[in-house]
Image (cartoon, rainbow, N blue to C red; front, side):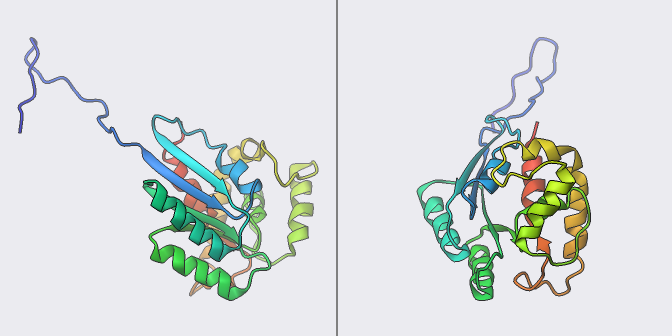
Length: 201
């Protein structure tokens, strides 16, 4: 092991941060705009981490296969699959989670809609509601008409993010054992948010 050089004052210069390899994220989303717009809004400097967000517009199982294809083309430290329960069959939803885990991917799912994550910024919701009601509820909470493909929603909700994480954790804890396809409402989006927050500056 080579010895560190000692300067004229007799001590070794301190290394601030010698990490050369950046953390590379691949986030593959079911939605083509709503989820990608949200995750692209995280203020992560490119010299700290790279975030590749893809909106594929596929069902959960095809989404996981697409993530696998992308992972084979590039090296990523973390691969996340983001999808909703929607009207997909329980089999497709559960198999997608199982297959993603088998590939070493992480899953940020929502049952029933991604907008549940937004609602949790304002209130704890543990009662299943139709997808259309999420739009109405968010319009009331935001005090304006909720736009599904909003590019400013991240900034609007940022100050309430800690509340959303707390609510999401409490919601998941209500299900024992967890059964993602049946647990409505539930979400694991906070797990991806917490991971990205480690690199936000």
